[in-house]
Amino acid sequence: MPRSLESRVRTIEDIALCGALGALLEVAGWPKPGNVHRTSSLEPKFERFLCGALLLYHPLLDAAKSGYRAGVSGRVTSWGLGRLLMESYERGLLWHLEGNTNLGTAMLLLPLSAGAGLLLGSSGVVDLKRLQGACETMLQATTVEDSVEFYRLLRRIGKGWLGRVSGVGAPDVFSARAYVNLRRLNCTFLDLMKISSKWDAVADELAHSMPLTFELAYPTLLRYHQDTGNINIATVNTFLTILAQKADTFIVRKLKAAGVEDAEEKAWKVSEMARNALALGGASSKEGREALFKMDEEMKREGGLLNPGSTADIVAAGLTLLLLDGAKI
Image 1: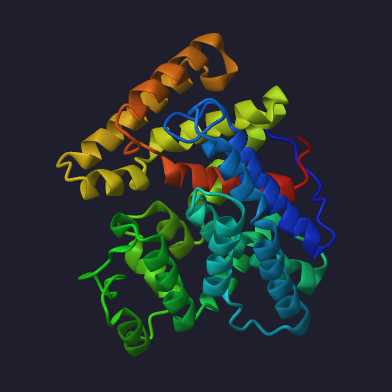
Image 2: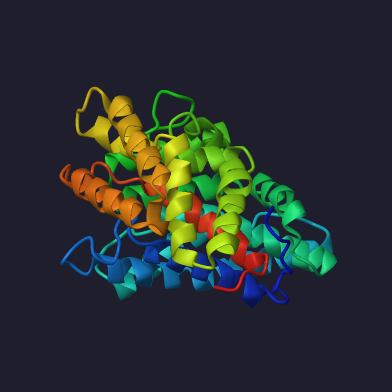
C-alpha cells in the first residue's frame, strides 16, 4: 500500500512548478517506446521537447492564478483556457524549432493548475481528493471563445489528423465558417472535448474528469516510485501500464490519416508489446529494458506513426499530481 504524502504546495508558483516539472520528467523518461526520448534521434528533438515542457510554466501560472482568484472570490468565471493553449504554442515557436511539442499535455495540465489554484484560494490546501472535482469545475467554466481559440491553434499547427471533427456535432476545424458555426452552436471547449472523446484519449480525460490521470496514472506512479525510489522506472512503467490497458488514440488517428485500414489492430499490437515488456519488469530489469529497446526500434520503423503521444500526455498529468502531493524525486 503506497504511503501517504504531504503536499508541498503553498503558492500558485508551486502549482505551476509542479506542472512544468511533471512535463519535464515525462519527456525525460527513458526509454519510452515510440516517443521522443534522450537516445531516440540524432536530431535535437529531445532537447526541444525539454524546452517545450519548461515553457509551460508561465501559462500554468496564469491558470493557477485564475483558479486562485475564483477560489478567493467564490465565483468561477471564464479563465481563458483557449488563450493559454495558444500562448503555450507560441512560446515554443520563440524558443525551439520543433513546433508543437506538447499540446495534449498542456490541455491536461492547464485545467489541473486552474483546479489546484481554485482549491488553494478557497481552502489554502491542494487536496488531491478534491482536485478532480475542482478541475471539472474549471472546465465547466470554459466558453465558446475558448473553442474558437482552440480551433485557431489547430489550424496554425496545420495537422488534419489532429483536428478534423466534422460530421459529429462540431464544425470541421478547417472549414471557412468554423468560427461562425462554433458561435452559432454555442459550442464550449468542454462541449468539444465531449464530442471528441469518442476517438481522442486526452479529450476523453477532459470530458470525464480525468479518470486515467487520477485513478491509474497517479497511483501507479506513486507505487513504483515508493517501491523503487527511482522516478525514471516509475515514469516508464506507468507509461507501459497505461499503454497495456488502453490502445493509444494518437496512434490510431495518425494511422487512419495515413490510409492504414487496420489502425485499431496495429494500436492494440503496440499495447500487447507494452504488456510483454512490463511482464519482464519494464525499466526495472535488464530483460525488460532489452524488450523496451526492441519495441522502440520496431515502432520507429513506421516513421512516427506508432507514437503513443496520448499515453505520454496522461503520464505527464499523473507526474504533476505526484509532485503536487509532495513526492521528492
